[in-house]
Structure formats: structure tokens, C-alpha cells
Image (tube, rainbow, N blue to C red; front, side, top):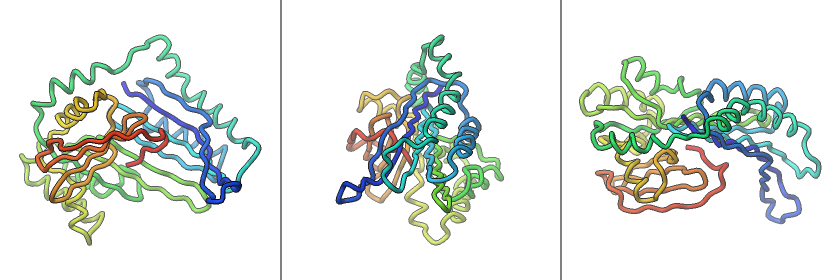
Length: 285
């Protein structure tokens, strides 16, 4: 069971402010445990919303192992005193979308607490693997590395996926994923496939490839260690970014209203940790 956090926000330029900063207003927010919200259901919701508002809207969707974060932004190029008519229609679509979750949370008010116990039990024994962060301008399934892995029948799991779609005149779309390949050390073909796939994404920069690949990491153990240091339950941690240099490894987790930045050495032992409270609509990889 996952937990979904969805926010509908309105962004507009504040003409009364000399710096012309964008102001953000939270119009509606939802938080439910869910068994049935899939990427397909979210895609269908977005399609329905686009029929109501065809332009000046953005979608930011992060799907982690235990949590889903969705931000729908109504983009207003000028300050508007009156409520946009599409807001009411979009809220109606959201209310309809969450009907099954509302019933689930009323009649079965349980959550996924057992996840933490399972990870504590399995984290030490799990084989090490490779964590990879990739991005591109196609859907997740069409990213070159994902296609290479599937072509070679290399088993992997999605840790986190994210896409940002903006409809503002000319539309834009960016997708990203962090994946985990188990037993990476056991097969030389995995490194070959990874390097081939990453080279297709960015053939000119080997350094970029190295920075977004963490070798020989026990991810569940790292999760457990971060949880222990922050007193945040494992199920509330969503990996959203990672970066490696010769001196250190930096990983970032979203935990609902916080971003946890973890600094590790090259053996993935935590050296430093920082927790920053943020706005909930900030979540992208």
C-alpha cells in the first residue's frame, strides 16, 4: 500500500511586488493511503484535466516505492482577482478521482507500517547492486537505458520515477527515473549494458555517467541507516536525487514536508546529514 499526496496550486505573477515574484496559492490538497492508484489512473486523470484546461498548466508526478507525490499547477501569467472557472471543474475531477481512496481510508484506516519491519529484516542480507539515475525527453519506458536493460533481460526495479509536463504554448516533457539493479557484481554484462544505455543518453560525457551511477550499494541498508539517523520511517522516505564525486556520495530523500540530504563516503557510510523543511509541491528528481 502506498500513500499519495496531491496538491492543486495556482501560480501567478504578483504585479504589486517590485521583484515580480511568482506567488503560489494552494487551492486543494489530498492525502490518502491507496491500493489502486496506478500510473495509468494518474495518466487518465491528467488527460481529463487537460480537457478542462488545455493550456497554462503543469504536472509534476513522483512515484516512489512507498509514496506518490503529485503537484498540479495552474499557471497564470498575470495576476487574477477572480477564481479561474477551470479550478472548480478540476477540483470536481479530483474529488471523483479520490472516491475509492476516501472509502478505503474510512473503512480500513490502516497504513503500511509493516514495510519498515520488512526492510529492517532484509536490509542486511540483500545483495549489493547498482543505483542509476537517468532522465530524458520521452516516457520512462522509452528511455534508452530502460530499453537496453529490457533487451538484455536484465532484472531491475524502479525506486523512483518522475515526470514534469508543462502545457504553456509549446508543451514540454521531461522524465527521470532512479532504478536499482540487483546482484550487479555477479554479471559483467550488466556493466556493459549500463554503460551502453547511458552512452546513448549522453555520449559526450563519461563524467556525467559516472556521477549518476552508484556501484556496489545495499540500498535497503542505506534506507534503514537514514531512517535511524532522522527518526523518519523508511516508508516515508522517497529517494529523489543522487550524485557521486571522487570524495563523496550525496543522496537526497523527500519525506513529505522535508528534504533530507545525506553525505556518504565511497563505502556509503553516512558522514553528514541535513533535514530541511520545504514546500510540499517541491519534489522532482
